[in-house]
Image (cartoon, rainbow, N blue to C red; front, side, top):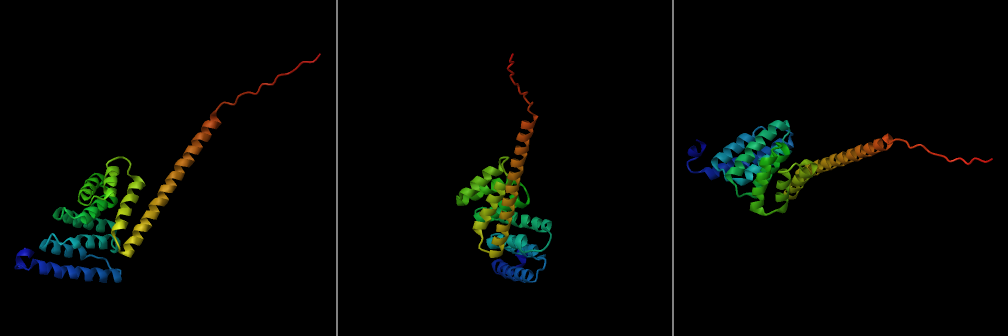
Length: 212
């Protein structure tokens, strides 16, 4: 209906709302306000022009890294925005990368994330996409997969606030991985110690010389 009402000025109207979105996000961030209008504005823009590619990533990044609302709300809106962006623009590697990361890191939908990373690889031929897709299809997900996904995102953004948050998440996962390795080491040490303790003690035999 909005497209019909625009009377052929869809592009101009989409650009108008795109500028409104930028202004709104800046204002909300500067005043630490909840970004409740991001999702409705994005719906307007993408209804007018589903190929307005910048909108999807910009909105998703603001929701996930700048919005102050609970994660569940931001996650749901982010999923919907990136899903629409991905299917409307299947040739865009950046939207595909963000959507795959979102599905994997926030939604824990590993199978679907792997498929999207594979599609991103077919577009961009970035080796880390293929490696992460393979890992997500196996049981070997864990910290290594999370680190790989975060490092891909870190390479793709120049926003210093987002880079800082990604580095923080990388450090947290590295610390968790180190703690897990230490736990395994301690468990193995205790297991080996118990085996050693449970071995039967061998009697010591002494020989005696009898002198007449």
